[in-house]
Image (cartoon, rainbow, N blue to C red; front, side, top):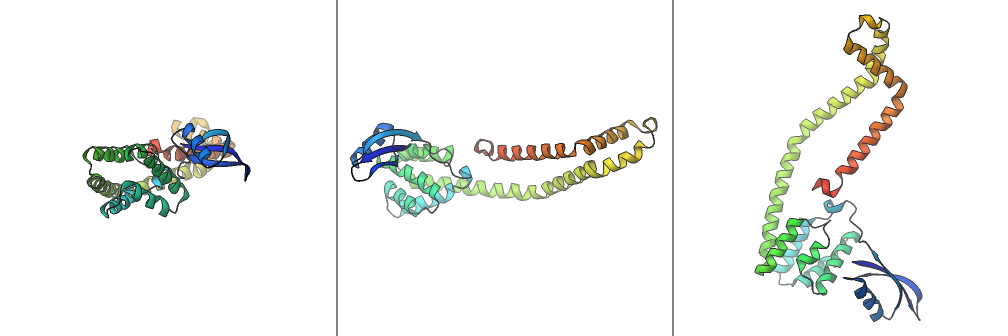
Length: 241
């Protein structure tokens, strides 16, 4: 966990520092070892990546970790290198937390499970299974093979969906144009014929034209609000998963 501490030292006076530890007692102990007197302490949630799991490339992480392990490095050494070379500050924070948990004696799977927004359950389970067999490199290779197959299937699905999505999008725009622009204007023409001479469906279109004319701004605002809510919901990790 990440903690925010208000501390005091004779040299620096009162200041605030951050600390990553397994619990509040460990965070207080670390600050004391650095020569600080802890005045207050509170837990601070680890900042999630800006776009959640999508911006943290698990496949690239597994590939780099596999390369370092194949080169003869231990898990802690490899994680220290990955945390040190990470350019994105959020990714560096996540990897730094995992490194700290490893240094405190936790297993790699437990450290990865502490960041569920970045590491999917399957990846954590694969690493945990390798801890029973002692062959992390083979487990990472299996996950990378699965990851490549999944990406290939996803690319095919996306490619196959582009044309239907374009058709649906263009059709929706045409319908919106007809309902918002054409129908209200033709409704005025039909209205001059008298309600008795106009079929039922045509009368519905005329009424719709009146609604659009009188409440067009409200309808447009509602449509925009619905689109914003839909995009927000679809971006949630639980929905994307």
